[in-house]
Length: 254
Image (tube, helix red, strand yellow):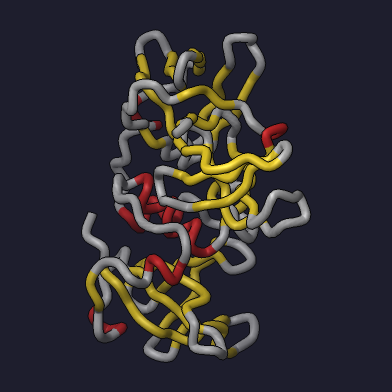
């Protein structure tokens, strides 16, 4: 089975082989995937980071074959770099790089070498912040359904990004995330970093946020924002009412 590494900042991952199909997720720079099927100029792929299946447009692709199975280093902030043809590329947090040489300011993806600026350091790939500080870094990132990067992210993409930076892969969708970790029974027993899940009128998990501190949740809803939370759910000050109904709480050990 063919395996590749993405070399675009991101590529939309769609429900079907059409630009009119819903964007389910994204595959990010440095992430790896396997090709399952091809239809016209579309490929059905399986992402190796979170085992997500969808369709990508071959015309969007910049990629290289994965030949060494080496693990990537996850960026925790944006990084300006240059391709071998001297064109610029701005990578975002969550993207992955390989074989970083901090002295030469270079890294590789597959057979291609990239050059970064003088600011490139271990701080880009070594996450020393707490889970709360990591989440706050992405405050006001706009909400985009299916987004996984700070310039456009959805609720489960946000929680996945925070944990990815901290070295803990978690599933892509909120309902999948609600099935991992251990249950926390009461909101008063939560710790920073616990994931809180909310259901819709049909009783299905439809939203996820992360406990920032006792009584506060950070989540992507319109934008990455901080709201109050109690045993009923998220209280939104602008509407003076609850916007999300609390369903369950899960603790994930990093």
